Amino acid sequence: MWQIESGERFQFKLQGPDAITARRIEALERVKKLPFKTINPGQQLPNVVSAIRQHWNEYGTQYAIIDYVQLMNVPGYKGGRNYELGEISATLRSLALELKIPIFAMAQLGKHVIDRADKRGGAYDIKDSANFTQDCVFVNLLYRPECFKIKEAPDGQYYPEGYADIHTAKGRETGEGITECRFDPIHGFHDISVPEFQPFAGIVANRSEEVPF
Image 1 (cartoon, rainbow, N blue to C red):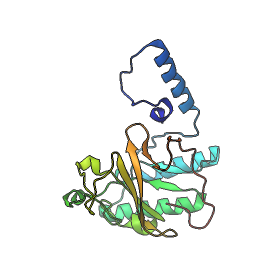
Image 2: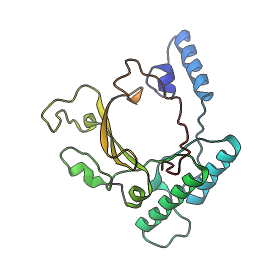
Image 3: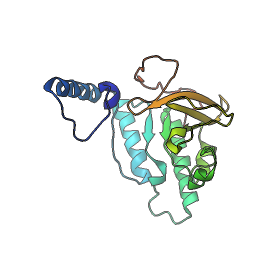
């Protein structure tokens, strides 16, 4: 968020003239006022659920992002890892429906994806668990061929500079599709139809029965 506000890439040692330092501090102050809060409740499922529910009660939280689900665990669980992640998935789905807010669960893909020529993952490539694909409303996969030094698309055309896309591998109401976008180190993924990047203001909770998870 600071990169978007300041317009420059983050570094651990930011040095420069007083005017530039002041501008960086002003950007930091603006970020602090944004309606986002980062918390670290630990890796246990009950603690994560409790933290989300507490902030929803106290601050009216509109959505939650978990980074990332394969780090989570269920205390005392004796079954296999796939079944444990299945319980985590079902619990997060229930929580989204209970609070009527979107819950975004970041996840890793299996290493086998790297063996594919185009390095693309699919809906059921989520590492250790297919339950997330079954429980969730959307599965969105981020793709940047530049990361793998892939310059040519399957149709033989060269990717434009900064090419990226978001593959909706599952969408209960929208269906599947690929949305082309762009990526740069400061703004991240952004819409190619917007000449000048506009910071995303937030997400309005879906009040229908199909709450995104």
